[in-house]
Length: 43
Image 1: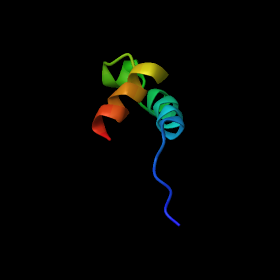
Image 2: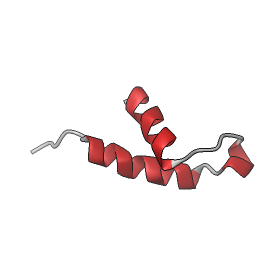
Image 3: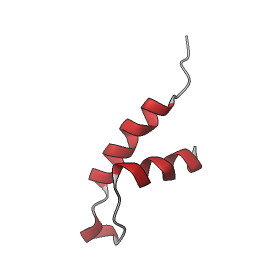
């Protein structure tokens, strides 16, 4: 059975994304919220 990605999945991915790409290395101040929005748009 294949499960579709849900909003809660994107929120968890957003938290990971924000931690994986810190501002000091990438120049973007990722927060869990704006990373989740970015991933939602991408997805």
